[in-house]
Length: 296
Image (cartoon, rainbow, N blue to C red; front, top):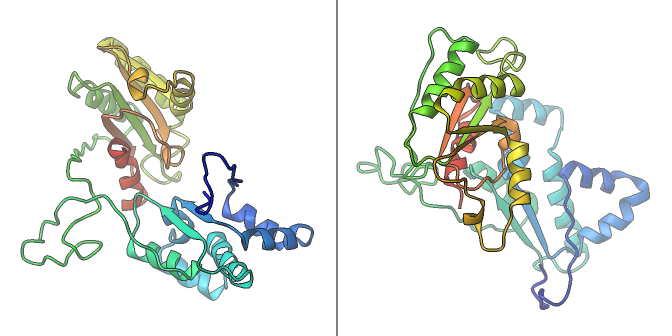
């Protein structure tokens, strides 16, 4: 958005692209000059899922990539914007906005040094650290709080044996035991490689969808659908009056099934609970899945 004009009357160009797409345009001789000139006159850059774009590697992977001189596309693009903005003589005239559910200090630092500008960290208050009373400087940001929302509650169930029919039975039972006022449940498939406990070949989307449909049928008040169907339904039923127009009828509960990768960054209204099937690859993945209930 342009800060020096009335954005309600003067249209602005908004470009949506992945960092790799922009990097390719900057590296291709045919488009290089045009795009270098264009990124030098940007007013705002918005980086969504910033943790995945500038801080997704483990310590070992970072060392290997450093030795191989590999740089993430998002870092390359931000540095290019800094260089071209400086050449255009308007270094302080652009804004960088980065969003992520897990904005760690390393992510914040990588963004700041890649773009060459200072960033103000704005985050929702988390729950108190369990040792904050004795050491108030604990936590991700040294303020005695964690990344987890204060109202988020967790429950762990481990089916024994961990086999597909047993896991689906426990998942359906967990959904059925939720409070009567529950209107929408998100089932996230945290699948693993073939040697893991929840391989993709077994815990496929269609297989899980069919199993939940079958096992929840006896309870009578559940509608099971995929994430894509839920998004299409929300777009069809969109109303200017707000999300209340898109609520399920009283007594009905919608169960949305999606993979861990597909749900990342997706907003679905009125998610009351998340049932995570499988093993998340990291704490960050778990937090992204669990955080579907805490969006505002």
